Image 1 (cartoon, rainbow, N blue to C red):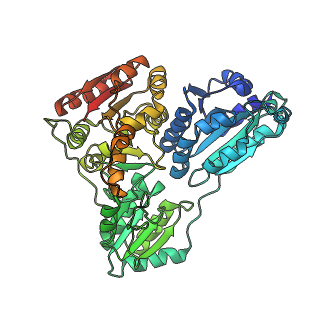
Image 2: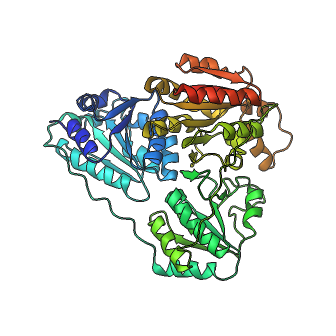
Image 3: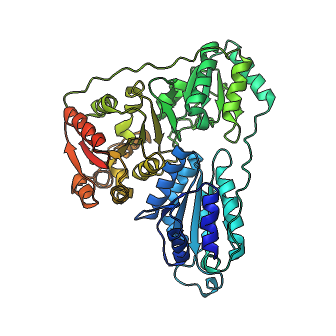
Length: 514
């Protein structure tokens, strides 16, 4: 067999059975190998940022990596923004980047680039195969790197001659190291602080936001009187009826500092110390009081569930009941379509065990509170601030969990970054309902202009932040990619459109005019 075939066999042996791809000439042998192994699902994205964003959504839901197939350094560069989001989310991803044959690099052909240097900022591990015989072992190591706690972006660069050269066979899967426990002293310190009578916030993230982690954290806070919170941006959280509820640190810096000012102690399990998203004149970067006791009980590299088990035991919460949320049906809203009534329509119609992908930005800020007691669901969102991830993540999440309905909350401005995703949704038949919040502006940037202290913006402000000259016709664009949809302008119409969209069990776009 050749190197490309040994690569596909190794990926399948390591549990990687989905490849999001945008291939080119250097990857033809890999594509031919994919053709020989129907167990590997190959999904075409019309732009590399669709490919990498879909791999991010897939990895968050599957908790194991998909592969990407990207074409040389420039193709990888096109996908970097959504790899940035995946890196911040600690999503497991295996990137396969085709490149020039090793002997061709010296000729400086047009696509020649420093591919390892392009990959490095958005990858936790980068490696270039040097021979066809080495490809299988390199692929096994890429899978091991991607699947090591807490999840990593692993990039394997495959020169063309290593793909077509002779190889011996697939490599056996490598042992994935178990996540270590934090030092016992950290657990003891956290338990003592929880018993101290001080005002304590237990701030949890990453794997701790799954249902079992929330249950343990809920027992701890119920036993000790501490508050339970999550960071502003989370890779995935299991929430809704029957699960432990919690707040997230607010995005606006003034709200966040006011909210966190009430605590004397912040105990972090898988979470970084909270900071402002941006720097603002005369406002702090860190969101905690200078005198707060800020303790990292466990980092993302640790066994977060094991940490919470140990902490629950240390404070005597083993048998404490966690406070779970009851289902509270939301009445269908009426009247004008606003972010608040849109949130009510989502809560009123959300199916059981849906997956919500949130890149609604300003238009979806009411969603978390309004849907807190909706039927149980998973929520994934933008993590690295690189906009344009919502549609691709929804695609990847749906392919990872094909039996579950997916709702994508998508701002109009950022949705245009990956509009081509709609074509792949139509081709793959993914049951994704997309709400485009069409406010005809980069609304979040209009707010940021005020936050950074700029007053009386003029013509350039209107030109750079408004999207209404000409107006973008989202339903027409969707139909052009094979996705049906409709435009709505009232709360009642949005509710009815959501019901139709879920019932279609196919991609469906709703343009919500705000």
